Image (cartoon, rainbow, N blue to C red; front, side):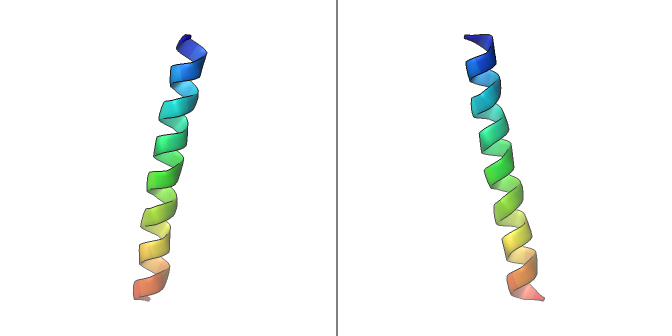
Length: 28
């Protein structure tokens, strides 16, 4: 169960970072 929640958190962080990078590329 712990591993499952860690994977979910990692996925959320990954998506957040990706969206931030996308915004940087779009604005530049």
